[in-house]
Length: 243
Length: 203
Image (tube, rainbow over all chains, first blue to last red; front, side, top):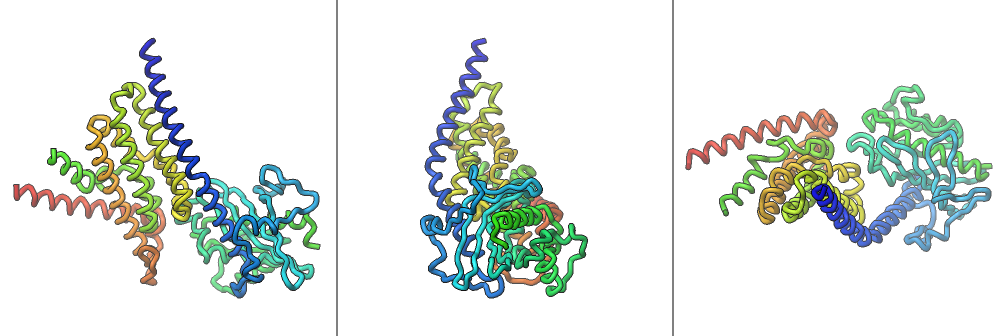
């Protein structure tokens, strides 16, 4: 009896010390972690605010936010949406979430850029992306994406989503493609092509994203990005900015 | 005493090399060695955990009741892994992101539990530290060689610097990992066999 008690107490003491040490380290790294995450987000926003064709910033560079304060000024609150636990929109048909806040930037030529952060389920966990949709004269175009969280994806397969040559396969997409819903080439039933023009046309007009050749046939991670993008488009439609 | 130290060093790096000789920690050795940088990151993270857990376990070895020693070791190891995970998250964000899932998985790396059970729980703190350090370095070295070979052959680059257009892409994928590991382990066994023979002759 006494031995059992002693055994349990020793184990408890070890876990207590370990827990205490962990909490100390957590206090120490809480701020650096938040800072690293913020820098990552700002960098991602800067990336998606580049024009897909020219790679130049689509707006005056010093207007692009560089810290959390200047970023907050671009927060957009669409009517009829309430953010709950950091999530502003979910859909019964598409798995994933659009995070709050949503950002809106005004362009000099009357256009607007919507920058959204969202996630969907990947292979081992959530895949989070930042995307930019340009709305101008009643037209909408998916201008760019950046993948910010893919830590649970398989290195060498799904984690290849972080390479530029893979990300570039997801944009630009015009309204017809977005309306049809984005899908990977395998799900669309088309075979991958080496003809860049055909590949780009398929994507722009029909929403067919070809990744099977650059991601070794992996589709789960690509589909996570696609689900998140479809969800974001649905959110923008429901918010009434696409009329 | 110095003899014992020298033996620990030699065993960790060569004779008992965790990856090539003992075939321990195969999961990270195969999965994270797609490039030299990833391999070193994984190796160093594992070494840190191994050194710290070896030291702590050798300090508290007399306090731990025999029956619950494995849970106690796991608590110690898991705490250090979580610490490394958080520190990497805060300070080396890019590497943390690429290694992703494999950092928390260091907890179940049998190399660490193996050294705790077979060495740290039976030896003094100083020796346990040395053993952890050199076993870790042996592990890091093996991962680095494997990662370099796979990156050079599979991606035509070294430390991210592109130098060749020849890419045997299979080497970046899992089958190439097994192939490279098998060939390197064979080569390693061959070389260390030669070395120990020649050193025995001298004796």
